[in-house]
Amino acid sequence: MTLRTRHGPHDGHVNSDAAAQESSRPQPTVSRRWSAAGALLALVGALVVVAVGLVGDLIWLPVAILAVFVAVLAGWAALVNTGVRRIVASLVAIAALAGLVVALLNITPLLQIALVVVLVLVSAAAGRYALGHDLVRSSGSKTTVAPARRGVLLLNPKSGGGKVERFDLVAAARRHGVRPIVLRQDDDLVALAEQAIRDGADVIGMAGGDGSQALVADVARRRDVGFVCVPAGTRNHFALDLGLDRDDVPAAIEAFGEAIEQRVDLALIGDRIFVNNASLGVYAAIVQSEAYRDAKLATAAQLLPDLLGPGKPGFDLRFRGPDGTEQTTADLVLVSNDVYRRSSLGGFGTRENITDGVLGVVALTIDRGTDLASLMAAEARRIDRFSGYRAWTTREFRIDSAEPLLDVGVDGEALRLAPPLVFRSLPGALRVRTPVDAPGASPAAVRPAGIGLGSVALLRVLAGRPAA
Image (tube, rainbow, N blue to C red; front, side, top):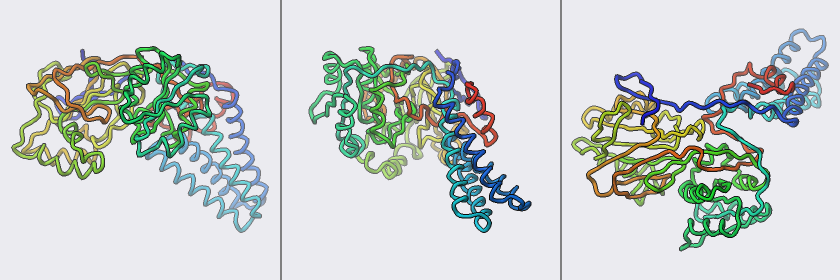
């Protein structure tokens, strides 16, 4: 059953986003209200110091006051945005701060200059804490839960090039009162997770890559216990979209303490759970190569001509398109757990949320004689403008084929599965816990925030109202 489609610039072109269900925003906490007050007071303090230092100077005083405002407001915007917006706002903040220092350098003592700079930085940081959570699109109901009574963390020491050892996650788990179980070479991860819950674990976590996360998440789903994702893999897409800081791996273990819990979706291919996506066609064939993990770009460049070159047959992948018509071939099919915001096939992008209860489907078909050049051009700009690109959402999806086995990449793992392949969304299947002070949102979920947001939003938080 197809749920939503959107037509793009080409005839028959379909693109889509899963619509987020808005929920009422919680009122700001006392600490956020104090932070809003601190941000505003630091801003006023910086202005006062500048005014005292430049009193009577009718040329530099307005310049310095303007520089303070721009530095602080751009700093707020940089801290609550991502991507290009963050870069631009950061550059504006740095330029304004540098200009402020130059304006004051020959007029006021160094101590006053240092005080102004410190107040500007304090205002920016406090504003980030006060505003950040309200500038995130709602991703379903979240509640604060008590610490785990008997938490267990499974750890894969080989994931992420040895992150378990590098970040000393075993010791970190023990410091939080969590029992660590380090996988050995012949261990069955699912069996270990099942046994841990039979032994009384009320919260179970996984420190490893996305494939391992999916296996343990499936056990947590079936047993209805809380799940903690510790991003100790290579790319950690699931952790990114849960709003975890992938650079601070040990911090994720704090979710075994008092934490934020929400129900997120999982997806099935046959009877196998996946947390991110499954791919078929050219990408899945490349992933099957033993050389892929060590040299991704080189391997892809070597295999693509053999897979997509002139005269090469298309992949035998049969499915219904968004309009219900039968498709007999595709060069790439991506099925995701909820919808990714993507502009290229080179990266999966991020999801605004994992609570829409749908599968995101992308199908790409290439005319070997005419399309390769335009595909490369679209990939360099916006892949959804390529004529052979289709995207839609659905709750179930089926792929048939005459091939006895199909290459499938599932959460980065290379598999060979017998068709038909049936995909299903499992809405709200997993109870995920994240630390109270985690970022809390993926890059796709952050609301664009301009420099003008600043003071009005902070005043709203100070008054006990959501910033946006």
